Amino acid sequence: MGKKNPSVRDALRATPGQGVHLDPGDFPVGPTAKSDAAAGLAATGKRLAACQEALWGEGVFGGGSRSVLLVLQGMDTSGKGGTIKHVCGLVNPQGLRIATFRKPTRAESRHDFLWRVRKQAPGPGYIGVFDRSHYEDVLIARVDELVPRETWEARYDAINRFEAELTEQGTAIVKCFLHISAEKQRERLVARLENPAKQWKYHPEDLRARAKWSDYQRAYADALDRCAAVPWHVVPADHKWYRNWVVAQLLLETLTDLDPRRPEPDYDVAAELCRITTADPLG
Amino acid sequence: MGKKNPSVRDALRATPGQGVHLDPGDFPVGPTAKSDAAAGLAATGKRLAACQEALWGEGVFGGGSRSVLLVLQGMDTSGKGGTIKHVCGLVNPQGLRIATFRKPTRAESRHDFLWRVRKQAPGPGYIGVFDRSHYEDVLIARVDELVPRETWEARYDAINRFEAELTEQGTAIVKCFLHISAEKQRERLVARLENPAKQWKYHPEDLRARAKWSDYQRAYADALDRCAAVPWHVVPADHKWYRNWVVAQLLLETLTDLDPRRPEPDYDVAAELCRITTADPLG
Image 1 (cartoon, one colour):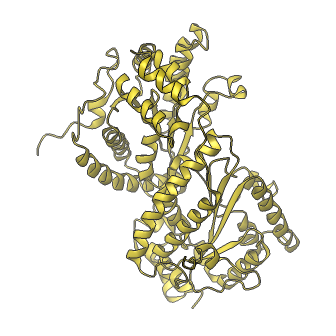
Image 2 (image 1 turned 90 degrees about the vertical axis):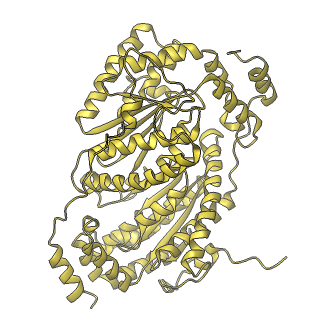
Image 3 (image 1 turned 180 degrees about the vertical axis):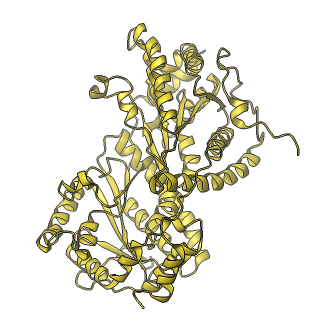
């Protein structure tokens, strides 16, 4: 038996203390050409869809308690939406629970920061997807000083406890930091501005956040360091095709590990077959 | 200019008073061969995805109030789940809100039958999908006499008022009766029983409902007749490829009529382009 290839999870797992050390344009594992990645993504999609159906059967009909939660974080234009479309779009939408965390509403702001997040935790059998997440509360909240330092400082521990609870309850959490370069962000923002069909996806605040690039990178590095009990994966995201391949692979490795089981029939299969073939009520 | 082809909506719209008159194995409009339908579905999927993105932009970011609601009804094995997987799977899952209505919980049963349904109405910009719906309350509730006759009799009007309200609020409702033959149902139930990977999708109650086939057909015919203000479409569903093609087409015609508009930028595009190209905060 040959040596097993390193898993994508192992290859891209963030190492606490090292911050974000990968090159966003690099291919540290897997395909290095777009066409290979496309073929790989299609194959992964088929396996992912089969695993998801089993997870859904197990959790929704079989009394199982397990689920998956994909957490997508990254700077503007890093491809959170694109990943949902192209990777999550590979599986049956019925088994997905997608939650987008925008600026908290006034009602949400009056609660603890995890209040609105807990409500979106995926139920048994589902793949939950967080488009932004509780990490915003130690990212923009910190960079823009929306709350005092002691407040956001206390949140890292709260997040660790929250993620430990979810894990305990049977949720496999896949945390992805979609890592793009400042150059690539400029390119994508310009592309949005130049394309009338995409102008609505641009907001002037995007440039405000961009101006604080290094503050954000520092906040991300801290989040990766201080919330590492459930590991983060750094996804080089300058190439969309590579980003998609990586996230699909991370999901597939996670689901393969879970090895979800379709429920066993709780009735007598032979007797039912007999009923319908020899004693069909409709004759 | 040639005569316009009849729309699929026109061709398959149920006519009040005529009940369910189509042959479930027929192809009254569109492709009659599986390969043509597959090519058509792929092309429709691309257009559907583009329309959906515009609807999502309009409703979620542009202040629009419009949405779409796909209601899927049909006997067991008629393909509600398959339609969600293969048709709804063509669009960005982020823009979908899928609700499955199973047997009401005890808490749900204590409310009016529309209580749990109203909560699942799609918000602006979304395509809601009902896997079963409020119609169960005039189908199984009637056939199995779960409530007294005067209760289910009163529900037709309540449903009409509810659907009128949704329409008024900007929701385009697409009601599909996935129409299969008793023979096809037997074939599919047997296939589930014979395939270990599918046995969990079978329940002995499926045969109990099958034994009441003609009662159900009558209840469906009445629902189609009495709730026709928002029209029903009878989807011949003995052929999965035809069913998928039809539902995709019904959605596309509906979205094309809505003609959703991506929001106009509410900022000065030229000024922003200038900022990022000549005064990039990251220099």
